[in-house]
Length: 348
Image 1 (cartoon, rainbow, N blue to C red):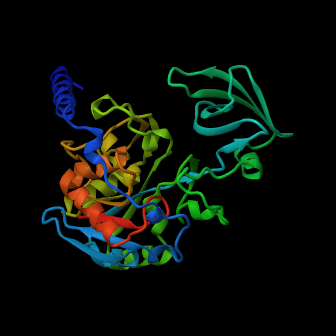
Image 2 (tube, rainbow, N blue to C red):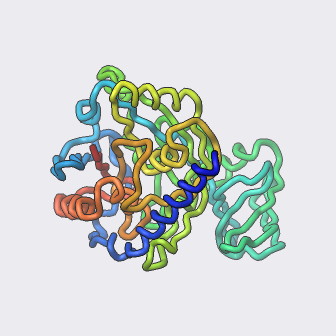
């Protein structure tokens, strides 16, 4: 990058940070009755409800997820996150460990309880861990000892890490993964993708709507609560992403033919915006809020998110805060199901 471009990027960052200073966490609050928090996944996956929003007109319509192909245009591109949730929750009698990000072959960043530095945790005959370091943000680095393939061992003894607002037992752990999940590494599901079925993909192909995949391993960055009232003080936790050459080519072709790039989920959106839709890999702590100028996506498919969360702030960046809150009020009024196992919204 040239000196001139670096100066321009620095100036734009300063302007963006300044523009965030008058945005408050409480500006993104809405009242949600507890009974609307979905506790179990719906069957079949694509029968969930879909709130469709025209962002230019601000109009709403109520559909079903299986209507998605007829709501998009031939030539559009749908980009999905193929990260897979793995059994990242490990327990002993008095300790709990949640794996967040792999740092090396045997070291993971994690959170949990009763994780003092130097403590050795024995999970099974094939798996133990030493708490090697306490990081400045309170997270831990755990160094594992194991026999065989690490992920195979986790499949035997680990638990699926469900969000705390889901209190009912999940009988089928595969329902907290998308049907296209491929790359193990997420501590939480990219939930907009949970609605897709093979029937959905077949209908998309028949309509002439292309699909492509990115990978972002979901960790704390997506779900860490915003504690500061001034949202410019919030720091996202970095998450690893990959965008391959094939997906980058499809994005460029879609733009060239005048199609829309539609992010399936906020994690796909954050990946595309972090790298501008170009091939690459790295970590991103991008925090998308109102006044952000989107570089890669034209539309968004997403679930309904927690009040005052970074995710509802991202949606507000695309739709506008007032229109977003009005859409959420309509969803509450119409008794949509909320959060991970809930219904979806499509912003076009």
